[in-house]
Length: 218
Image 1 (cartoon, rainbow, N blue to C red):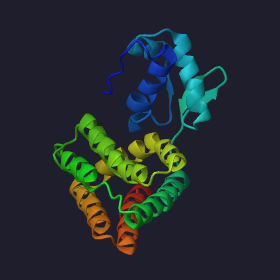
Image 2: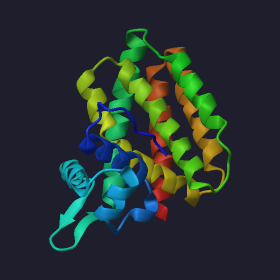
Image 3: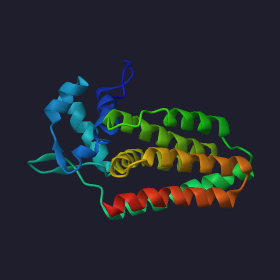
Image 4: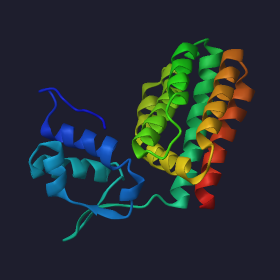
């Protein structure tokens, strides 16, 4: 679980971060209503900051507020999965070309993240799966950030919750997917280090297409 501490964080910020990192990334909660009182107790705040955080998540498109029912976590649809992968492909391929052209490939950072990812136990523990996908997201975010475009970085970062959701789901739907993900990441990194933009784009597109197809088949 992500630990949130420090007096600087307001109750709303604590609630928002907790919901994004520990609640909305749980595939089991898709299609369910959230209990504000239970969430407030878990986070250690009153219900008001939880409600304020939920309103922020509504604006992010991650939660729906249903009158007289409460906060609902919508199911990620096949169309949203396809659109997510399409957007990621555009942003990551653009970033790959930029970092290659400008000799800013964050090779050491990405390799370190990949090594951490490969060391996550290959089991059915949801927390291990979530950590694996957190590192997966970090690997791609490091590429995006190296491009040096703050707007692109912020846009990509906002995809974080959906990426973890679909990523965790993909891990549990296909045996051996973790090893395959690490191999696909290594292909992307090798192409970046080699300075081959076309090969990097091909590796990125393949990686995203495999994940998309796994999710859409099931």
